[in-house]
Image (cartoon, rainbow, N blue to C red; front, side, top):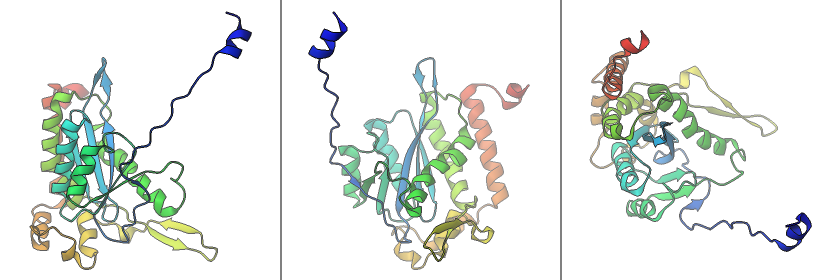
Length: 270
């Protein structure tokens, strides 16, 4: 039992990382074309040892078109329908799907789903988040949307898993349309000085909604899905003003929270 004996006789073998040959470790190259998604998961907190719902947040790198889907758990049973819903809600063709190394995305079933639609699956590389401005942009894009959209809409409070379907209905009918047609986003302009240093500038005139950014792209018809048209998207955008869409979304969110927690917001504030 002496320390000297144990130090000489005991040997420890560390756990070896298992290589997962699913997805490609590379930086996506959209080249100004929409359809390259950055996907991340947001957990809605734990309480008394019970997990809350999960939000799957998908953002297009070029247009910042965003789709949020809420699921009970991040298992194959729920993730495959969630990813299918994301692909169906985006109006343009999807070419790339980029995520971190989480097992909810890097698995055989997700790979089969994406391969069926001819979508390239890529995953993050360690220690490459700051290798260049473009790489830093697409890594930070999903993370910033988690905070500016998901957390500001739902907060950090624990929401039981049984309410996932109700929350996903709110996302489809109110949150996602409001974010894509009525909420403007900053789009950076990259400036390069004489020494080759790249600087990102956010100019006020470059603020656009994801839909307006989509319209500004050349050859837009080639990017849209066959069942959709520019006229149909413009009709959806003009159904409500930005203010009316936001007021309707806020009312729907208040009703959602009242249903989940069984209390009115006024009573909780009091």
